[in-house]
Image 1 (cartoon, helix red, strand yellow):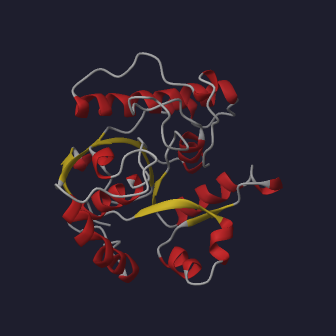
Image 2 (cartoon, rainbow, N blue to C red):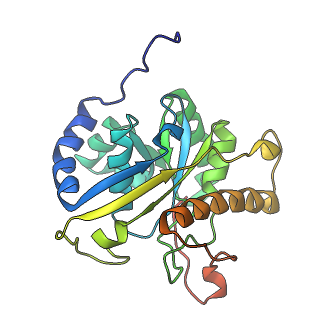
Length: 248
């Protein structure tokens, strides 16, 4: 691609259909402030790692990425790709199947990373693995999935944070608050510097160290949005007698 050529639009028919169905409602319930949106790559593969404290977070991130011209992909359970209709929707929108159990578990990140690079996708991975357990909705301790994916694929890892989503759908809530209309702010950060870890055989300690860099970047962005400092120590569910569940 030459300098004067525009990146090819990712807004294919399936994403336009999803936008047609979701955007009117999402604009009804909230207005969106996008800060430093230029830091989201306009083309090429990358991993996006946002904070996570509401079940509606993926939809909010999807709306913002649509506005910025990139289409979100998520790692989805391979079993979902066997469900009629849903399977078609997942494949048509480029979602990535991942086995979560058994002997395939360790090889799946490699396969997903290859797909990410081959198709030049933007993949959203929540490094916390689940909704934060931190009492005040700050990012908690992260898992290594996002870092592993970025390192395996050798692509940038972009941190992001949003604030205001909890007003639309509080943590663990089952219903959306429609009125009054809420405000959601989303801020993107510079790529996390993982150069010290690329091309190396990494153990648990190195992956934890790299993951903490990501969580620090996300917490810093959240702090900017909230106008208050993030806790000095990341919330750890295992130290607070909470069962930890999560995705890749």
